[in-house]
Image (cartoon, rainbow over all chains, first blue to last red; front, side, top):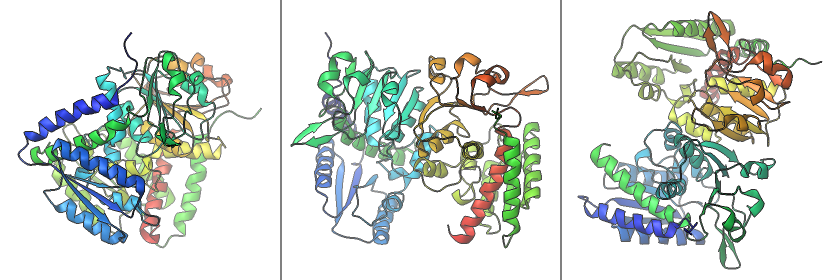
Length: 280
Length: 280
């Protein structure tokens, strides 16, 4: 029997090699600047992963760290990077320390360098099905659908979670791919009735094993975006062990959606580089 | 028995009076500029409706008409209006003549004067649940929900149609109001199974009597955005006569959603005026 596992770890390695090959042929190295403020522990881990991945692929990685900085000064720093032709991608590592205006700061990044796809303008472009930089996690999920030949056109996809980083861009990517999409969230009533109808279920709600066996449709495809830490172990939003034999395809946690995100960030940096150099 | 009809004609009249009252108390008259190009017959009708409504409410109405104009020149005209402090709202009457770049032209309007809510930036703001100018038809539908006390939180709303003017902003407004939303469209499979589950059904597909009695849920609320002309008469997307006794509330065509749209445009002009003058 074929494996049911959508192996994001393996796919992300394949893509990393493809991107490395691609970068080696470019005239200059693309440059990514990561901005962080304060000392969030989780952020340090994520920033480290980005650096490692950028180095592997051959992307020039710069880290701008501030222990403390005022909003206006940070926006001025971003503006310098916006105008610097040698910079292709800018990300602000979230969350910022309390009291800082994340929305205003993120939206000060020009759309062409917004490799996290978080600015209003990029969100609007995506909604309008225009070429744009797309948020990395949903972009990674779309890539998994492609590589595992999951047909989206006409299928009913249920997305749980309406965050700006995952749920909402996921919804728009799926609609653009001709899927029928239902967006559920914490206020949804009778969730089980809805999830049981899903051909494809994308869960990004951040609750350990929230989706149980009786909530999924037999033969469906399950994408688990959750990363819940508990007693030093990682758990998804889906009760994987009990759901596994009922479904057609499923992403494990860890090793499913997670590894795709960083690689998609690098792909965005390269796309941004190409747009700047080819006027595409 | 209470009437099941959502009387958009009546509600729009009420709002018109409210807006007239509001404008009478403002220091200056808010100004709306409508730009049209070419000689689209339907556009002439719509432009006329806007002028009439603006005049009634006391909004200063200006019509800039070009028989023919190049994209760049039109964008320069828009830019003049963007910078003119006496102008509060700018709309470009669509469709523009073939060959003109509607997207580029519409997006040259500054977000503060984009009273049709059509720019990418405003779409992104709406997606992020930020204060913004919202597309008039879905804004009008939200107003109808409010005035008819239709609870949205937790309810399952099915929207048919994914246009930039109606379906997509409708979806985002409903999600922001804590509804669970399914977006369906021409590629949706088993549409009937989905519409039958809807607590509220919003139809904007542009096909006469596309929604039949067996497709709606008993006791549901039906919003019909369709305006289909046939033999000189107007028909909705819903087979009203046969659906009527099965549902709780329903908008007629004409006299339902239609009359709300122009009034919501005027409300947007006033909101834009207030934002400019109060820095809200």
